[in-house]
Image (cartoon, rainbow over all chains, first blue to last red; front, top):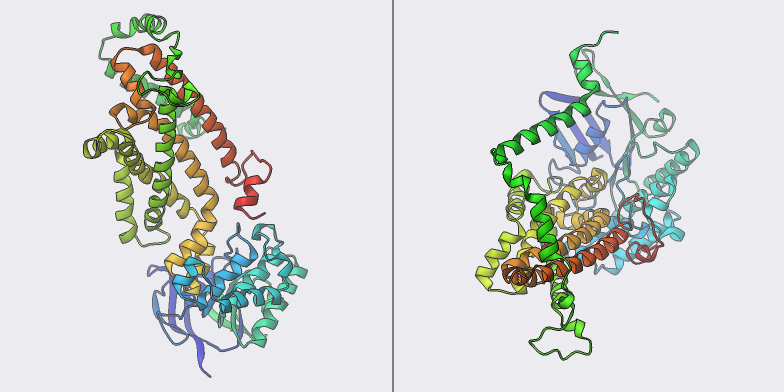
Amino acid sequence: MSSIVSAVDLKIGYSSSTILASIDNFQINKGEIISIIGESGIGKTTLLRNIANLQSPIDGKLEVFGSQSYIERGKVGYIPQKLGLVKHETVYFNVLEGAICHESILRSITGFHEQKVIDKVEESITLMNLSHKTDEPIKQLSGGQQRRVAIARTMAQGAQLILADEFLSELDDKTANNVWNVMYEYVKANRITLIIVEHNRDRAKLADRCFKLEKNEDNSHSVLIEVEK
Amino acid sequence: MKFDKEIIFKRKKYPIFLFFIILTTWFVFVDLVDGDWNSLENSLDNLSVFFYESLWPPNWKVLEARSYPVCDRNWDFLCSPAYIGIVETLKIAFVSTGLGFILSLPLATFASRNLYRDSVAIPFRLLLSGMRTLPSLIWAIFFVILIGLGPVSGVMAMTFYTIGYLGKLQYETIEGLSKDPLDAAKAMGLSNSEIIMRVVIPESANNLISQLLFMFEYNVRHGSVIGIVGAGGIGYYISTYLKFLQYDKVMALLIVLFFVVVVIDLFSIKARSYFVEDASLKYPSFFQSIFRGK
């Protein structure tokens, strides 16, 4: 089975003198759901940012979709802790941001979108049960609805790898479980790989595999270990 | 309880700081006066004489039609120096603010360090800084020499200054944006131009519009200054009356200008309140319905 994410002897952090985490071997296959737990400041977000190609590793090898430097447009969907939505704009506008990955840059910046892009946006909004909120600004939606917009954006984008960074924090348990179920069903049905940083251990254990970042013996940096479920 | 100097300083830092500012300002002022206190002694008397003999009462003839060219309009006021001057000043400010905004926005995005690396951002910052270094008055002198007397020189001068000033406000706004929406867009693989169109401009739209209104307000005030060097607007008439020592007419024009600026300020404050996040002034949603789709 081919790895979607492959990390060998990986060192991540801000500089060679401040290594946050060291990962010996980390392989993630297509369609897997992976959860990562660990205390604050241990390097969970930094690991996701490295996988998303937003930050470069300090040392070692990190391949995403078989490449160390280039990721095809639209293949990776990143949901930061605060969701990364354009708050002043509508649900439609935000989901469209994901769908423009399927058209040329010229079309996307001039606003002459292809019909397939429009269809993709409408389909994603409908699947997330947000049709009645299509033209509402994000800041007027509830926390749960905002998370569903973020999922709809990755849907419209057609992401094959979704990186979600504690995106359920700040929600009450019932809403968080609802959003988690929506995400879980979507990625399972479409064989999409999901790496989710989660502080709730019960939810984290619902993933196919669960990893923990924790300090090594001499407390110099953290290491990634697989947690038995 | 033990009080050492450091604790006393920390607790009284604001009065100490204020005292320090007053003291240094006074010493520098004394240095500038250089012992010539007599020139200041008579200044109040001079002001009183100048005000009552030359400035007051204002000469409201500036609101009447000019003798040449002959007025062909129904209402004399429409041919008056005050009306012609102020309308030209408003036109100069409007065009230069619009042009400046359109030209400064791309430069500001290139100057933003959260969008482009330092090797790209720093040269653009230097360019904006250079345009801002020269006040609009100096730009006006420069363009009057290049283009000649008239409002086009005024427009060019104000546009250049607007690009420098507005560009700085814009890149500071862009750099203050939350990094989450930018990260999400970068991870998707969107190009910088797409990120600017789909994230940067929508996220900062309220601030950009607010800055645009502020800049228009600013340009109306400065539009009166650049006219003094022949770059059109009400400043041209002020300068002419000053040359002929007609200070009462200058006074009348300054009063007209003051009222126009106050009206624009009031409009601008009201309009800006729609675009500033969590502003204390909130008005019914006419603007919101147009710009925010509510």
